[in-house]
Length: 245
Image (tube, rainbow, N blue to C red; front, top):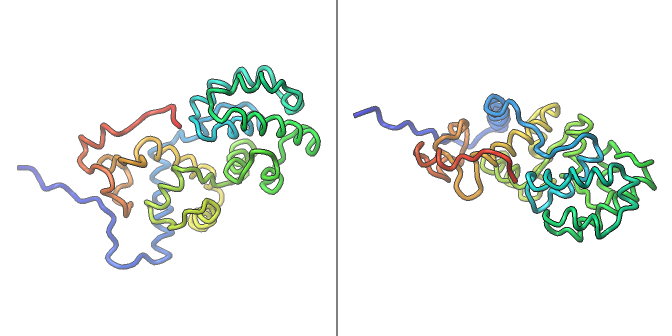
C-alpha cells in the first residue's frame, strides 16, 4: 500500500484577507509564468492594423480559423485605405468561415473608412480612441494595446472571466468590473502577459465543463479545485494542446 493521496485543494481556515488574496494572485501569476513561458497572442499579425482586424474577426470563432483567412484578406487589403475601398462581396467570401461574416464585413469596411478619416490610416494608440472604432470594444482594444503597442492591458475574454472567478479573484460577471478588480491585484506591467497566461491555461487545462484539476500545476492555490476530475489519469486525458479557440 502506498501513501494516501494528498489533497491539493486550497481551503482557507478563515476568510481570506486582502493581503492574502493579493499574495495568492501574484503567486498564481508567477507559477503560470513557469508553466507557460512562451504564452503569447495566438492570432497571427505583422502590424497593429492586422492585429486589430484579426481580433475583430475572432469574435465567436477560433484563432485557428481566423489565422486561416487573414493571409488572403491582408494580401488583398493590406492597409486601412484598401479595406475602406474593398468590395463587400469579396470580403464576405474571404471571411465567411469565421461566422457572422456579414456583420463582420460591415465592421471592417467601416473600420477602414474611420481609420482613414480620423486617424490618417493608422491604428490609434489609446483605449479611449480605439473603442470609438466600429467593432472595437474594451477587450479588442486591450488586445491591440498590449500586443501591438506594449501598453499594458487586461483582456477579459471568456477564459479569463472563468479562471478569475475560479481563482477567487473576483465574483463579478461584468468584464469591465473584472478588469478593474484584477488590475488591483496584479502589477500593471504584467497585465498583458497575465491575460495570455490565463487564456492559455483556460484553453489547455482549466476548461469550462471539465477542468483537468488532477494535473493542474496551481491546484493547491485554487479554491475551486475539485470542479473537475482530481485523479491524474482521468485529468490527463482532458489536457489539450493548440491551436485553440
